[in-house]
Image (cartoon, rainbow, N blue to C red; front, side):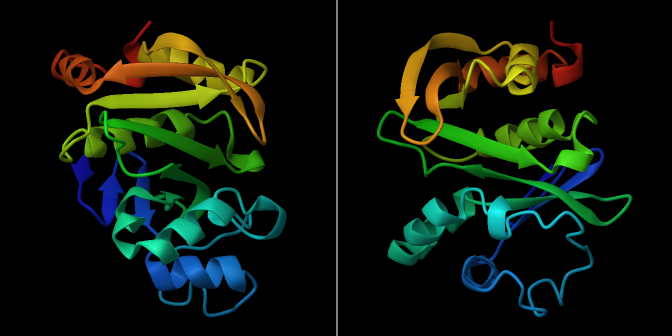
Length: 195
């Protein structure tokens, strides 16, 4: 697994950071033909466009207020073999004062049940644990979202409580310390072999 600020590489996926100009264009004009013109991948499932805009409405204002935070934000999840966007993934914000960082992701409907979400999470978390001031990984999910609940159970995160999300309603909160995540990686952890 190769991890850099702009690109995170996992066995099957490339997680491309969306640069600020592309992020703004995607938010303001998702049908613009110039949007992915300089990329070597396509967006056949219209990820992050129109009704699939996902986190853009929150991340764009954050980036406009402070462009340095974009490194934490939205990445295209690209299936390398087909050179197609299959989803997106993003931290909600830079690490907070306690070092906690929360993540969210979405996989396009036709691409689900292939392990892309699990692989993308592992790639993002493997990158973020190398960043300064990150101490706690957080994942929140509605208990009724059974596929996402199954994903987090593979990673062995601890359930620490619930929160009420303004848009999604009640969510379960799961966390793992960076030290425990690193230990799991050192011990040969992969999301597929964790019970």
